[in-house]
Length: 415
Image (cartoon, rainbow, N blue to C red; front, side):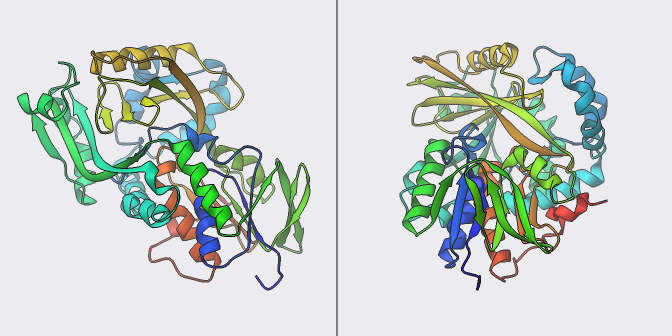
């Protein structure tokens, strides 16, 4: 930092903004760069849950056997643009290669380090700032048809138990006492205590960006094109408005990081997992806390604008527009779970989650280039963003994180 040049953080989502704040709190000069406004990209569209217990990857044992059937089931929330399949296939082979017990346990162990204390990390980031009012401490509840359906998920719950997450089961008449707006399709709840949610993820990240500015950070709106180097060390970020000289760089642009990583000599097996949500504005008849409805594989969260329901997955690349079928399925599942739901306008959203083939985010420096990365959080970006930003700031200011960073090393994709 003796050069007088700032750290340039590329990406104004939850990871980038969190990193920028923690660096400013350590006295580092920081310029935050994005082509769009803070919090309006992938961080805008999600279920808003601070999901400490979401440390089990999708690639659990048996997925290879079940996957083709699920992809062809019009009532299962997994969609594939078949014209995109040839481009998807190399990544998909790598991804499914992790659907075994040993890899699942290894990945879950890594993810637990990122999300296991997420509620505390969000508070450490936002308490005392203009963003703190967006956070609500709450239960996070998993809704099942009955006890048998809950027990069918025993592999996932056993892994959560080993990580220290045990639910309180609610059954029978107690289900409607806990949540009166549930329909008869739900007969068992697994309630996770000590979680939380964000009432407006986009507003939350925007408020955190305002906090960054109040700490003396600099905002620069531009499209990033690449990097310039002095020897092997990054010296500038090339943007649509010209070069930004830098001491070092943080790359936190989600799935859009892939092309920039190629300039650093790394081809990352990273795909976009297109996610959908619907906000039922001014809704009544929905849940009072975030609820994962297991049968529909979606999460319903009460937010400032209304009830947000999210959770459909589609593989179709970065270029294709939204599909009608995922949104139609989501509406059907929502009405089934919450038959008394009433709302005004229904606002649809579709965005891009960054999915590495091994379900672990990339966090750390690329070689000795001075380029640090924080992307690839799959379903846990909002949850794990503050912890990721804190870890990056520690690494960049000469501190040693109090955890094993090896699972997240970008070099695992070298060669």
